[in-house]
Length: 217
Ligand code: E4P
Image 1 (cartoon, rainbow, N blue to C red):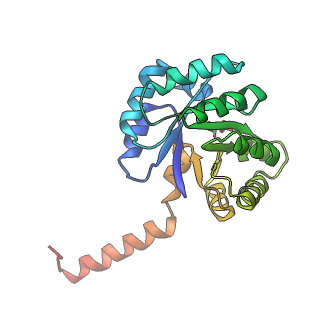
Image 2: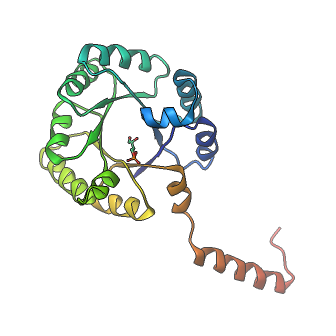
């Protein structure tokens, strides 16, 4: 499964990219507002730090302006993916952009039939929001399973990008359910390789090794 980071904090993304485990980045208008910096400058820095797909979201409501915004975002760097909302206008913009060689990420997906529409529009990625569904008393992971079944039934090439991830358990369950990628907040990413038994085990191994008085190098 590909791991993307859900953030617009260019400095933190640069540090996380050094792990070699980051395959891409997703941003959204709220994350850009939180970062508090110029959008285009931020995107340039992120695209330089992470070689994979970097989603940048349009903010227009109508197809024509979404396309104009999308093309401007695409001009920032070749790894920009244009993020469009799962609305009728967003799907029209998705189809136009994909038909003209520009990858898209259809965002704010909350149902399997919405994902089907995104796949039919030719989206490169569709982003089902797991955490927000859970927050709303629904089962976000069930949506991933439904979309996986539909895309497999018809061989849709659209990648399932599990979004609105809140916990390491979400990452595990999305991987089991067959999501192609997950976009993860930095805090959750850092928790993925942590385990208290790893830390305790390493401490004991190092103590015992020291008692042998030997060295490897
Ligand atoms: C996805 O692309 C979105 O940026 C993101 O995952 C939204 O997550 P949230 O529900 O934590 O805001």
